[in-house]
Length: 342
Image (cartoon, rainbow, N blue to C red):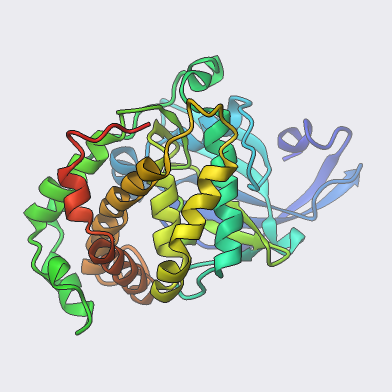
């Protein structure tokens, strides 16, 4: 642990390490309390490593080493995020280890679908995503040799086995007919995959890739931070913007604040006028982006408690379902072949 902290805390020497919390999911995660023989360092750190039971899933949907590569390559992330003290990769064993900041020390407030953001808080998150996207927009991404490993966001196989009807049954009586009429083949082949394939068109940027509310936290009840960068990819900006907004707000708040928040995103893009997407292009990309959240959270909700707490999965499935109907995502997907993504 001394070696892991050395770069950020020169002169420290760790005396003791004690596990105080373990909270495994698709990865192994734990919080450790530290004491020191010399120097000053954090009172606790958070460790994340691959879980052997989920390695195949991670390789298929996320990429085993994307997060440690991102934090090990020195790329600047102009958004609130956990500090990473060490990022280690063992390719032969298909394992990694991240030694990270324990966000509880800064009073971070992790959020999930049961505790949605306010419109003002979501606006802060939108501006953060615009900063990230601007820094790596278009040719700027290619200028960063440290990110040459970054893969495009492409569709993966496996979700077609989801028992979709189980999720549709859970949506409740207010579920849009346009959603409840979907078969799993419709959802995957006609909605999700066409949208995901479109992400390689237009200007590419660095994507968080998994910016749903469960991967966010608040500092001082205002500043939105993003954690869990395991799905970092290169691709079209719309994926991060839509996936974040449509799930982070209640259905009512999204409807009330959506247009303003899309303007916030566009205004916050630090780009020359000829590179900035038009309001119409922002709106079209955002409408189409519902395809991703809808598919992932319907499939997650169909699995009961296997992947996620049922209340969280259902809340997100309901939000993306409402957005799918409100924004006529099916029509936006049909327009993708002729639409020009900025």
